[in-house]
Image (cartoon, rainbow, N blue to C red):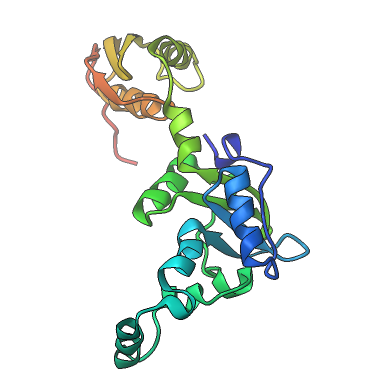
Length: 223
């Protein structure tokens, strides 16, 4: 499964000169949590998130407490949130160091990056141009599958001679996303191969491989 398979291709964006009220309106109107910021050639130059905009209320303008301002001075300068809180355009608010994904990237790798960096979404870029966006919700929808649907995919995999090990007699049952493999494979080394293949299917919660081998693994002689 690749990022292109689940990404949203119609992306709501803004430009660096987009004013603050318009940024808020685009987020609320479209029910999204972030806006990729692009130049006139759709090259990605930054991103504005809900947190960036909320900093206006938290830190912006003259509403800041004098004690907070004094703390910034003692610390050697304003926090990045205080700086964002004064911003009036996307260019003054956006984060310029943006984690991205590629259309042909393995989805698992992109999902790991989202989890490890605590990101809700990843802009998808091709030749530095924004071509899509993938969110946590997109990944969750991929995992939202019934046992019957998942069971059909497992059965197709087991019947595929180009993917499944040769001469196996393995069947699968699925319960609450847990795939149980029973039957026989020819060699012991075939069993973990089957498990790895099943794990690649979207929606798999766990794999219980109870398949047994009929023959010992073949010996590899000296080269």
